[in-house]
Structures are given as C-alpha cells and as structure tokens.
Image 1 (tube, helix red, strand yellow):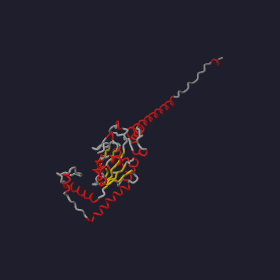
Image 2 (cartoon, helix red, strand yellow):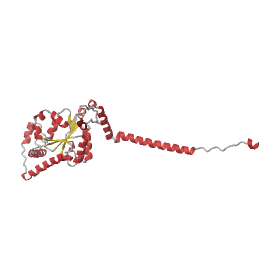
Image 3 (cartoon, one colour):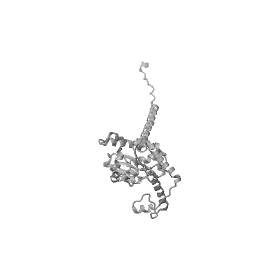
Image 4 (cartoon, one colour):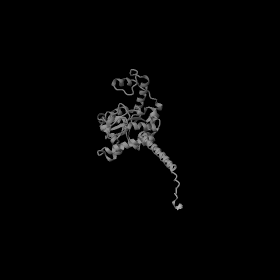
Length: 300
C-alpha cells in the first residue's frame, strides 16, 4: 500500500527561454536589414535614378497621348519631354522633334537660326557649346544635350510649353569632330536631326572671318564689337575695311575648310541629316519669306 499510495513528484521541465531569445534576436536583425534595404531603394528611386524615372514618365506620356496623326516611321523621331523645371501643362501631348545646326563661323548660322526661331513653335538656343567646360568630354556634352532636349535649357529663344522642335547651333570646332563617336551615338538613339549649314563661296567666308577679327580688335562701331550688324549704316562702316589675303597660303586654307566640312558630314552619315548652303537658302525666297519650309526640314 505504501508503495502505491506514495506521491510521485516529477522534476519540472526546463524553460526554452534561450532558444526563444535567439530566434527573437534573429528576427529583429532580419527586420532591421529589410527596412534598411527598402529605405535605400526608395532613396535611390527618388534621387539617384532620375534618368530611369524620366524614361518611365516619358513612356507613360507616350501611352496617354494620341499619336494617330503621326506616321509610323516618325514615331521614334518625336518625343514627349518631361521638364523638371516647369510643367508643359496643356501641351504635354505636343510631340517635339530634336535638331542641331552644325556649321562653321561666318557661314550664316546666326541668320539661319533667326529664321528658325521666327517659327512660333521652334526654339534654337544659340551657340551653347561656346564654353569649353560644356564640351570637355562626351559625358559633359551628353549632360548639356539632355537638358536642351528635355526643355530645361533656358535662353531668349525658349518657347517652353508648346515647343514643336528644339535645338541649337554647334560650331565644328567646338568638340563636334573630337567627340563625334559619342555625339553620333546620341543623335541616333534620340532621333536628332543634324542640319549642316556651310558656304559655297569659301573665299567670301574667309574675308568675313578676317573682317570679324578686325572688328573685334579695332571696334570701329562706337568702340563695340558686333559679330552681326543689324542696320545698313553699321554694314557700311564695316565694309570700309578691305582685308588682304595671303596668296601663298590661300589654297591650303580653303582646302582645310572644305576638308573639315567633308569630315563632319562623313562622321554623321548614319544620322538623319541634311546639308544646306547659305547661298541657296538666302536665294530661296520661299524659305526666306515663309518659315514653314524650314520647319518641314525636321519632319522630312
């Protein structure tokens, strides 16, 4: 009886506290790590990856805008910029074409750009690569091009919201030939229309270069230098200067200019481009008096 009636007391089980603490600590570490990764990804999307965001925004705009009026072959050549400095508002679905006027000094590019800008929806932003730091390398050049073609480059020619074509003029001695591979790649990827503008009469161009150099040093117009005159009186003052040409070096100089133009055209042969001559454009009254054909150059 005593054996059967005795109280049997079992030893209490050990509490699994330590394993639980280990699991809890591991879960906390994992949670902190996941939160850190998520925050880093959010910051990257908001600040460090503006290019990818821009592409996404452009893709969304393309989907929202009706492109039924655009030919199938033109679709890669029209763009819907999403500027970071202003809103295009009601013009957000206005397609924009990109262009660049490639020329040489004293070839009529200033007059031609004025003709382009006389169109209400065309903006040509001037000689933006005159500053050396903007053309120091391909990366610097691309950064400037992105700003121009995204409508974030402001000049007196900017039409802002309702631009239909945007571009600028670019002299061949401003990094075009030195960095042509990167520039051609950018033009092809973004459908930029290269408009070459040269002079047929290279001797007249050379005389203009010498006269401009003389005006820069002597400043006969009331002590100021003017690259382009805007009145008959100013033109008569500058016309009094008669430059002298060196006959022994003249032919070599003219060949060098012609060779530079030919090289540029050869480098850009894979791009959408057109070659114009100042004398032909000036002599074409249809272009000079009605700027619509100039705009159509961009859609041809």
